[in-house]
Image 1 (cartoon, rainbow, N blue to C red):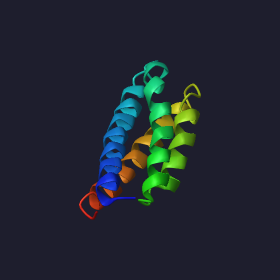
Image 2 (image 1 turned 180 degrees about the vertical axis):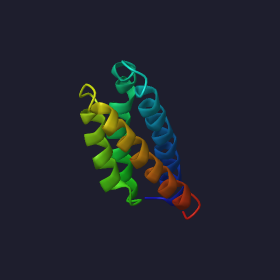
Image 3 (image 1 turned 45 degrees about the horizontal axis):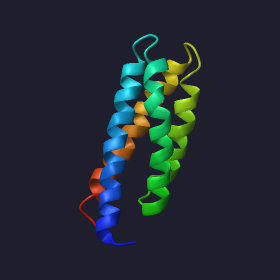
Length: 103
C-alpha cells in the first residue's frame, strides 16, 4: 500500500478514535450511552478494518475496544467498561499520533 494511503487511513483512524472517546465520555452521563453507542460501535469496527489494513500496531487494542463497546451496554457495570474504552482509545490515539509522521 502506498505511504500516502496509509497516512490517510491513520488520520481517519485517529479522528474516529477521538469520536469514540467522546462517545464513551458522553456515555458516562446516565442513559446517554444508549444514544452514543449508535456511533461508537460502528466506529470501533471500522477502526479494526483500518488497523488491519495499515498494520499500525493498534489491532489488538482495537479488538479490545470492540469488546468494551459491547460490554458498555450492561447497565451500571457498563461504566467500568466505558472508562476502559476511554483508556484504550487514548492509547490508540497516542500510538497513531506517534506513527502519523513516520510514513
